[in-house]
Each structure stands twice: as structure tokens, then as C-alpha cells.
Figure 1: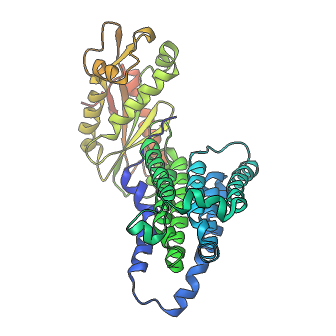
Figure 2 (figure 1 turned 180 degrees about the horizontal axis):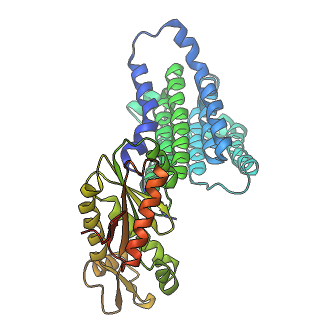
Figure 3 (figure 1 turned 135 degrees about the vertical axis):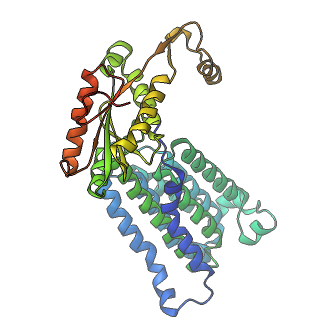
Length: 411
């Protein structure tokens, strides 16, 4: 399933804040003695905080990633000092475990899913432990590369595993564009930089692990915010976000309710898939409204536009412009046998006339407008007034903008 993408700035900015803070802390040359004693415990605290958020949202995937980060920061210094031969295999195991958990979709209950994930990671660790130094020597002991990797004692297989995981997480981030993938990517980058240095710099490992765990927690909270306040189909903020915004509006603003004309006929005639495409198209046009307006999906085929600090007279030309843009948008339907299998061919056809077997689809919207004023003080009253204007636009023939209290359509 394709999800609507979140703008890249908040997608990466919020989970990257702890990473920037960790980098600044590492650049600080003189740590107070108390800080060096506190830092090793921070990953444990952040894991507990993150685990509570995961349990709240029933997110076994993120919880498994957090446990893998905590296991790495807790066991790596001991492993490097007592069994240095195992650092290469352990790094490969950790990278593969991180990749599998990132790709492994959440299923069934949280308890069963977590048991399966922890069991898989435990099997990988048991294989390394049972194979021992002699069993792993032929695979990891003789292939250390020169230069920086040789000084770090990083085998070729470990480097390949890190690169494979980084590439996989990057593709997931580009494919889905969700906060969860952003947190997974940033968390891995922190650990991929810190783990090879963890034996010589355990405090740096603890700092970067804390940043990774915090990034995962922030991305999970951002994901929950996205699910609660954004519409999944169109990517627009939903009604809950609209209600929050209206509570913080000033004395002057204009609200418009837009409704897709004859939307039930689209669903009945062409199916719900075409209906969803119509809603996405209308949302994309409303998102571009000028004049400082903000678009929301109110529910069903209804959308809301809010113009802070604008009167109805000031907002009306922008609403008329977006109404005309939707009316002029070229949507064409192709019969299923005539649809090309290649995406590029389909894009060329959509850019042209659409082919002989395509049929034009005309989409229009009706818009009702109301301005907050002395008679309409509460947000609910403004919404109700805009709804009444919308009904007037529908009764007057549709595909028009109607202002509350007007005797004829606007424009």
C-alpha cells in the first residue's frame, strides 16, 4: 500500500535532533566527571521510555529494533575485550537482525510477534557462540581490508552487511516516506558509525546508542501523530487537526466547505478505486490554494479550507481559482484491456490525449464560504454557516462558490 508522503523537513528534522545533540556532545572535549558516570545508563533509560511508547501503540517492530540497539551497546565492550574474534560475526548478525526486523511487517499480537523476533535474534547469537573462534576463523578471520577498516578490525563481510542494511533502509525511506522509516534509518546510521569504534570508545557508543533510541522513539510518536491528525488517503490533515487549528484561530478568518459534485455516481459507476483517485486529485488541487489557505479533509467527499486573517471577500477569488482548476483538470479513464503494462507508456498516454480507448472524467466541486464575525463567533457556528452556504451552492446548480448570507452565487 502506498502511503501519502510527509514533507521531508519534519520527517527527518524531529528524529535528527537527538543525533545532532549527540554529535555536539562528542565534539565537547572536556566532559564533567558526573557526565561520564551518567552516560552509560542513558541507553537503558531511553529503552524503557521507548518500550512504553511501543506498548502504547502496539509496535513490536520498533521495540525489537530498540532491543537490538540496547543489546549491542550492553554486550559490545565485553565482547570486544573477551572474544575479539566474535566482533566481526556479531556485527554481521546485528546488521542482518536490524534489516530483518525493519522489513518484517507486524502481525498477530504484540506478544507473539515479539517472541518470534527475539527468538530469531537469539538463534543468530547462539550460532555464533556455538561455532566458536575456530568455526568463524575461516569466514571472518582472514579477510580484513587495509587502511581504516583494518585498523578498526572490521572484516569485509561486516562492511558488506552494514552497506546492505544501509541501502535497504534508504530504499524503505524513499519508498514509504514515513516517520517510522526515518527513525529506523537514523538509528542505524548512529550505530553503524559507533559500533566499529565501540571497543576503544565505549562512552561514544553509549551516546550514539542513546541518540538512536531517542530517534526511534520520536519517529514512533510522530507516526502516531500522523495517524491521528492526517488523512491516510489524501495526505491532508484530518478533522481532528482542523478542530485543533480552529481553537487557536484569531478573530478574523474565513472557512470554506468544499464537496465533490455527484461523488456517489463516481463510486457507483466506476468503482471505489476511481472514487479514491478523484479524492486524491481534488485534495492535491486544494492543497495548492493561494491566499494563505490551508486544506483539510473533513470527511467522505467533503474538504475544508481555512484562511487565517482573511475576510470572505479576500478569500473568494482564491476559492474561485481552485474551483476552476479542479474543473479544468483532465482525468481520463481507460478500459482495463487497454491499460498498458509499462508505467512509462501509461505516463506518456496520460500526458497526451490518453488514447482512443480512454474516456474523459469531469470532476467539479461546490464550495460554501463563511466568515467569522459577530454573529458567528464559535468555530462550530462558522462550520455550520459554511455548510449552509454549501447546500445553497448544491441547490443552485453545483460547481460554484456560494457565500453565507448571499442571495446569489459568488463570482
